[in-house]
Length: 314
Image 1 (spheres, rainbow, N blue to C red):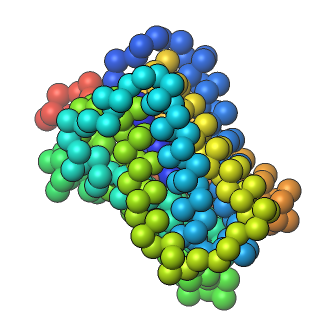
Image 2: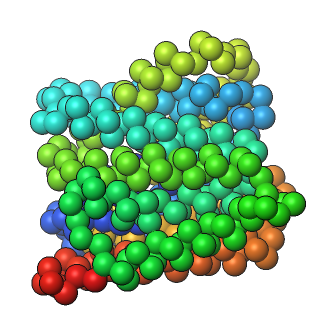
Protein backbone atom coordinates (compact mmCIF):
# COMPACT_ATOMS: atom_id res chain seq x y z
CA UNK A 1 0.00 0.00 0.00
CA UNK A 2 4.10 4.85 -1.21
CA UNK A 3 1.93 5.29 -4.19
CA UNK A 4 1.85 1.74 -5.40
CA UNK A 5 1.01 0.03 -2.10
CA UNK A 6 -2.25 -1.51 -3.33
CA UNK A 7 -0.45 -3.59 -5.85
CA UNK A 8 -2.01 -6.70 -4.42
CA UNK A 9 -2.18 -9.03 -5.78
CA UNK A 10 -5.23 -9.65 -4.30
CA UNK A 11 -5.93 -7.43 -1.35
CA UNK A 12 -6.34 -3.73 -0.34
CA UNK A 13 -3.98 -1.31 1.37
CA UNK A 14 -4.43 -0.39 4.93
CA UNK A 15 -1.32 1.19 6.16
CA UNK A 16 0.29 3.87 4.06
CA UNK A 17 3.19 6.24 4.17
CA UNK A 18 2.24 9.74 3.15
CA UNK A 19 4.08 10.83 0.02
CA UNK A 20 4.08 14.08 -1.92
CA UNK A 21 1.14 14.38 -4.27
CA UNK A 22 1.51 15.23 -7.93
CA UNK A 23 -1.94 16.85 -7.63
CA UNK A 24 -4.13 17.41 -4.61
CA UNK A 25 -7.54 16.40 -5.91
CA UNK A 26 -9.10 14.21 -3.25
CA UNK A 27 -12.39 13.67 -5.08
CA UNK A 28 -10.56 12.27 -8.11
CA UNK A 29 -8.43 10.10 -5.84
CA UNK A 30 -11.46 8.74 -3.99
CA UNK A 31 -13.23 7.96 -7.26
CA UNK A 32 -10.19 6.10 -8.61
CA UNK A 33 -9.76 4.04 -5.45
CA UNK A 34 -13.44 3.09 -5.21
CA UNK A 35 -13.33 2.02 -8.85
CA UNK A 36 -10.14 0.03 -8.19
CA UNK A 37 -11.76 -1.92 -5.35
CA UNK A 38 -14.68 -2.87 -7.61
CA UNK A 39 -12.33 -3.95 -10.41
CA UNK A 40 -10.17 -5.98 -8.01
CA UNK A 41 -13.27 -7.87 -6.91
CA UNK A 42 -14.12 -8.50 -10.57
CA UNK A 43 -10.63 -10.01 -11.01
CA UNK A 44 -11.11 -12.18 -7.92
CA UNK A 45 -14.50 -13.40 -9.14
CA UNK A 46 -13.01 -14.43 -12.50
CA UNK A 47 -10.18 -16.22 -10.66
CA UNK A 48 -12.67 -18.11 -8.49
CA UNK A 49 -14.55 -19.26 -11.59
CA UNK A 50 -11.28 -20.48 -13.11
CA UNK A 51 -10.41 -22.56 -10.03
CA UNK A 52 -13.36 -24.81 -10.84
CA UNK A 53 -11.32 -26.40 -13.65
CA UNK A 54 -7.72 -25.18 -13.09
CA UNK A 55 -5.11 -25.11 -10.34
CA UNK A 56 -4.38 -21.89 -8.46
CA UNK A 57 -0.86 -21.78 -9.94
CA UNK A 58 -2.22 -21.95 -13.48
CA UNK A 59 -4.81 -19.28 -12.72
CA UNK A 60 -2.06 -17.06 -11.32
CA UNK A 61 0.12 -17.81 -14.36
CA UNK A 62 -2.59 -16.67 -16.78
CA UNK A 63 -3.16 -13.56 -14.67
CA UNK A 64 0.54 -12.73 -14.72
CA UNK A 65 0.80 -13.41 -18.45
CA UNK A 66 -1.79 -10.75 -19.17
CA UNK A 67 -0.36 -8.44 -16.48
CA UNK A 68 3.17 -8.70 -17.94
CA UNK A 69 2.04 -8.21 -21.54
CA UNK A 70 0.09 -5.08 -20.63
CA UNK A 71 2.93 -3.69 -18.51
CA UNK A 72 5.54 -4.30 -21.23
CA UNK A 73 3.17 -2.66 -23.70
CA UNK A 74 2.92 0.39 -21.45
CA UNK A 75 6.70 0.57 -21.17
CA UNK A 76 7.11 0.34 -24.95
CA UNK A 77 4.39 2.92 -25.56
CA UNK A 78 5.97 5.32 -23.10
CA UNK A 79 9.46 4.70 -24.55
CA UNK A 80 10.83 4.17 -21.05
CA UNK A 81 13.20 1.24 -21.30
CA UNK A 82 15.11 2.61 -18.31
CA UNK A 83 12.31 1.35 -16.04
CA UNK A 84 13.97 -2.04 -16.27
CA UNK A 85 16.71 -0.58 -14.09
CA UNK A 86 15.87 -0.51 -10.41
CA UNK A 87 17.93 1.21 -7.74
CA UNK A 88 17.22 -1.72 -5.40
CA UNK A 89 16.55 -4.77 -7.60
CA UNK A 90 16.96 -7.35 -4.82
CA UNK A 91 14.23 -5.69 -2.77
CA UNK A 92 12.03 -5.41 -5.84
CA UNK A 93 12.39 -9.15 -6.42
CA UNK A 94 11.60 -9.88 -2.75
CA UNK A 95 8.59 -7.61 -2.97
CA UNK A 96 7.44 -9.34 -6.13
CA UNK A 97 7.70 -12.74 -4.42
CA UNK A 98 5.60 -11.47 -1.53
CA UNK A 99 2.95 -10.18 -3.89
CA UNK A 100 3.02 -13.46 -5.83
CA UNK A 101 2.55 -15.46 -2.64
CA UNK A 102 -0.34 -13.22 -1.70
CA UNK A 103 -1.95 -13.81 -5.08
CA UNK A 104 -1.51 -17.59 -5.19
CA UNK A 105 -2.61 -18.22 -1.60
CA UNK A 106 -5.65 -16.01 -2.07
CA UNK A 107 -6.67 -17.82 -5.25
CA UNK A 108 -6.33 -21.16 -3.44
CA UNK A 109 -8.57 -19.81 -0.70
CA UNK A 110 -11.11 -18.65 -3.27
CA UNK A 111 -11.32 -22.18 -4.63
CA UNK A 112 -12.73 -23.42 -1.30
CA UNK A 113 -14.30 -20.40 0.38
CA UNK A 114 -16.91 -17.73 -0.39
CA UNK A 115 -15.40 -14.49 -1.71
CA UNK A 116 -16.66 -12.36 1.16
CA UNK A 117 -15.10 -14.59 3.84
CA UNK A 118 -11.76 -14.93 2.06
CA UNK A 119 -11.58 -11.17 1.50
CA UNK A 120 -12.50 -10.39 5.10
CA UNK A 121 -9.78 -12.68 6.46
CA UNK A 122 -7.20 -11.16 4.11
CA UNK A 123 -7.85 -7.76 5.67
CA UNK A 124 -5.85 -8.85 8.70
CA UNK A 125 -2.76 -7.77 6.71
CA UNK A 126 -2.46 -4.28 8.30
CA UNK A 127 -2.16 -5.86 11.72
CA UNK A 128 0.61 -8.15 10.43
CA UNK A 129 2.35 -5.12 8.88
CA UNK A 130 2.28 -3.47 12.31
CA UNK A 131 3.90 -6.53 13.91
CA UNK A 132 6.57 -6.91 11.20
CA UNK A 133 7.47 -3.22 11.23
CA UNK A 134 9.10 -3.67 14.67
CA UNK A 135 11.89 -6.16 13.84
CA UNK A 136 12.34 -5.18 10.19
CA UNK A 137 11.88 -1.41 10.19
CA UNK A 138 12.68 -0.67 13.82
CA UNK A 139 9.39 1.13 14.38
CA UNK A 140 7.98 1.69 17.86
CA UNK A 141 4.47 0.31 18.30
CA UNK A 142 2.55 1.34 21.41
CA UNK A 143 -0.23 -0.36 23.28
CA UNK A 144 -3.02 1.26 21.26
CA UNK A 145 -1.89 -0.26 17.99
CA UNK A 146 -1.14 -3.60 19.67
CA UNK A 147 -4.69 -3.54 21.04
CA UNK A 148 -5.99 -2.94 17.52
CA UNK A 149 -3.95 -5.92 16.30
CA UNK A 150 -5.46 -8.15 18.99
CA UNK A 151 -8.99 -7.00 18.21
CA UNK A 152 -8.43 -7.57 14.49
CA UNK A 153 -7.26 -11.12 15.14
CA UNK A 154 -10.36 -11.67 17.27
CA UNK A 155 -12.44 -10.62 14.26
CA UNK A 156 -10.63 -13.20 12.12
CA UNK A 157 -11.35 -15.92 14.70
CA UNK A 158 -15.03 -14.99 14.62
CA UNK A 159 -15.08 -15.30 10.82
CA UNK A 160 -13.24 -18.64 10.63
CA UNK A 161 -14.80 -20.10 13.84
CA UNK A 162 -12.04 -22.57 14.77
CA UNK A 163 -13.33 -25.49 16.79
CA UNK A 164 -16.84 -25.06 15.41
CA UNK A 165 -18.54 -27.37 12.99
CA UNK A 166 -18.54 -24.56 10.42
CA UNK A 167 -14.74 -24.19 10.53
CA UNK A 168 -13.15 -24.47 7.10
CA UNK A 169 -9.42 -25.40 7.13
CA UNK A 170 -9.10 -23.51 3.83
CA UNK A 171 -9.21 -20.30 5.90
CA UNK A 172 -5.45 -20.75 6.40
CA UNK A 173 -4.88 -19.71 2.79
CA UNK A 174 -6.28 -16.16 3.06
CA UNK A 175 -4.22 -15.82 6.25
CA UNK A 176 -1.07 -16.90 4.40
CA UNK A 177 -2.06 -14.48 1.64
CA UNK A 178 -2.31 -11.67 4.21
CA UNK A 179 1.11 -12.59 5.61
CA UNK A 180 2.70 -12.56 2.15
CA UNK A 181 1.03 -9.23 1.38
CA UNK A 182 2.27 -7.76 4.65
CA UNK A 183 5.84 -8.84 3.90
CA UNK A 184 5.59 -7.17 0.49
CA UNK A 185 4.31 -3.97 2.07
CA UNK A 186 7.08 -3.87 4.67
CA UNK A 187 9.63 -4.31 1.87
CA UNK A 188 7.88 -1.49 -0.01
CA UNK A 189 8.37 0.77 3.00
CA UNK A 190 11.99 -0.29 3.30
CA UNK A 191 12.59 0.74 -0.32
CA UNK A 192 11.17 4.15 0.60
CA UNK A 193 10.27 5.33 -2.89
CA UNK A 194 13.57 4.21 -4.43
CA UNK A 195 11.81 3.51 -7.72
CA UNK A 196 8.80 4.86 -9.57
CA UNK A 197 5.44 3.08 -9.46
CA UNK A 198 5.98 1.91 -13.06
CA UNK A 199 9.23 0.17 -12.08
CA UNK A 200 7.57 -1.56 -9.13
CA UNK A 201 4.60 -2.67 -11.21
CA UNK A 202 6.85 -4.04 -13.95
CA UNK A 203 9.04 -5.94 -11.49
CA UNK A 204 5.96 -7.39 -9.76
CA UNK A 205 4.59 -8.57 -13.12
CA UNK A 206 7.83 -10.13 -14.39
CA UNK A 207 8.78 -11.80 -11.09
CA UNK A 208 5.32 -13.34 -10.85
CA UNK A 209 5.43 -14.50 -14.47
CA UNK A 210 8.87 -16.10 -14.14
CA UNK A 211 8.06 -18.00 -10.95
CA UNK A 212 4.66 -19.23 -12.09
CA UNK A 213 6.15 -20.26 -15.46
CA UNK A 214 8.53 -22.57 -13.56
CA UNK A 215 5.73 -24.04 -11.42
CA UNK A 216 2.85 -24.28 -13.89
CA UNK A 217 4.11 -27.38 -15.81
CA UNK A 218 3.58 -29.44 -12.64
CA UNK A 219 -0.12 -28.57 -12.47
CA UNK A 220 -0.86 -27.96 -16.15
CA UNK A 221 -4.32 -28.58 -17.54
CA UNK A 222 -4.86 -27.36 -21.09
CA UNK A 223 -7.25 -24.38 -20.81
CA UNK A 224 -10.21 -24.03 -23.12
CA UNK A 225 -11.54 -20.81 -24.58
CA UNK A 226 -13.70 -20.31 -21.49
CA UNK A 227 -10.68 -20.38 -19.17
CA UNK A 228 -8.59 -18.26 -21.54
CA UNK A 229 -11.34 -15.65 -21.69
CA UNK A 230 -11.54 -15.56 -17.91
CA UNK A 231 -7.75 -15.31 -17.84
CA UNK A 232 -7.92 -12.12 -19.88
CA UNK A 233 -10.63 -10.81 -17.54
CA UNK A 234 -8.69 -11.49 -14.34
CA UNK A 235 -5.38 -10.26 -15.77
CA UNK A 236 -6.83 -7.19 -17.45
CA UNK A 237 -8.94 -6.22 -14.44
CA UNK A 238 -5.97 -6.80 -12.15
CA UNK A 239 -3.77 -4.46 -14.20
CA UNK A 240 -6.43 -1.76 -14.56
CA UNK A 241 -7.14 -1.85 -10.82
CA UNK A 242 -3.47 -1.40 -9.96
CA UNK A 243 -3.19 1.61 -12.23
CA UNK A 244 -6.32 3.11 -10.69
CA UNK A 245 -4.69 2.75 -7.28
CA UNK A 246 -1.53 4.46 -8.51
CA UNK A 247 -3.63 7.33 -9.88
CA UNK A 248 -5.61 7.53 -6.65
CA UNK A 249 -2.52 7.92 -4.46
CA UNK A 250 -1.08 10.49 -6.84
CA UNK A 251 -4.13 12.70 -6.30
CA UNK A 252 -5.16 12.17 -2.69
CA UNK A 253 -3.42 11.44 0.59
CA UNK A 254 -3.15 7.94 2.01
CA UNK A 255 -4.91 8.99 5.20
CA UNK A 256 -7.94 10.00 3.11
CA UNK A 257 -7.96 6.90 0.94
CA UNK A 258 -7.04 4.10 3.36
CA UNK A 259 -10.53 3.67 4.89
CA UNK A 260 -12.08 3.40 1.42
CA UNK A 261 -10.18 0.20 0.68
CA UNK A 262 -12.76 -1.63 2.81
CA UNK A 263 -15.32 -1.00 0.09
CA UNK A 264 -13.86 -4.13 -1.52
CA UNK A 265 -15.71 -6.15 1.11
CA UNK A 266 -18.99 -4.83 -0.27
CA UNK A 267 -18.06 -5.74 -3.83
CA UNK A 268 -16.79 -9.18 -2.82
CA UNK A 269 -20.06 -9.88 -1.04
CA UNK A 270 -22.04 -8.66 -4.05
CA UNK A 271 -20.09 -10.71 -6.61
CA UNK A 272 -20.22 -13.72 -4.29
CA UNK A 273 -23.99 -13.45 -4.06
CA UNK A 274 -24.73 -12.73 -7.73
CA UNK A 275 -22.29 -15.22 -9.29
CA UNK A 276 -21.88 -17.94 -6.65
CA UNK A 277 -25.08 -17.51 -4.56
CA UNK A 278 -23.00 -17.13 -1.38
CA UNK A 279 -24.71 -15.28 1.45
CA UNK A 280 -22.48 -14.33 4.42
CA UNK A 281 -23.88 -15.48 7.76
CA UNK A 282 -24.23 -13.30 10.83
CA UNK A 283 -20.91 -14.39 12.36
CA UNK A 284 -19.06 -13.51 9.15
CA UNK A 285 -20.63 -10.05 9.07
CA UNK A 286 -19.89 -9.50 12.77
CA UNK A 287 -16.27 -10.60 12.43
CA UNK A 288 -15.86 -8.50 9.28
CA UNK A 289 -17.09 -5.41 11.13
CA UNK A 290 -14.52 -6.02 13.88
CA UNK A 291 -11.70 -6.46 11.33
CA UNK A 292 -12.74 -3.25 9.58
CA UNK A 293 -12.84 -1.31 12.84
CA UNK A 294 -9.43 -2.58 13.84
CA UNK A 295 -7.95 -1.75 10.44
CA UNK A 296 -9.42 1.74 10.44
CA UNK A 297 -8.05 2.44 13.90
CA UNK A 298 -4.63 1.10 12.86
CA UNK A 299 -4.65 3.46 9.87
CA UNK A 300 -5.63 6.32 12.20
CA UNK A 301 -2.74 5.57 14.56
CA UNK A 302 -0.33 5.26 11.62
CA UNK A 303 -1.29 8.80 10.67
CA UNK A 304 -1.22 10.10 14.24
CA UNK A 305 2.27 8.89 15.13
CA UNK A 306 3.73 10.72 12.15
CA UNK A 307 2.81 14.08 13.64
CA UNK A 308 3.47 13.30 17.31
CA UNK A 309 6.81 13.44 19.15
CA UNK A 310 8.45 10.01 19.48
CA UNK A 311 7.93 10.07 23.24
CA UNK A 312 4.18 10.38 22.71
CA UNK A 313 3.86 7.55 20.22
CA UNK A 314 1.62 5.01 21.89
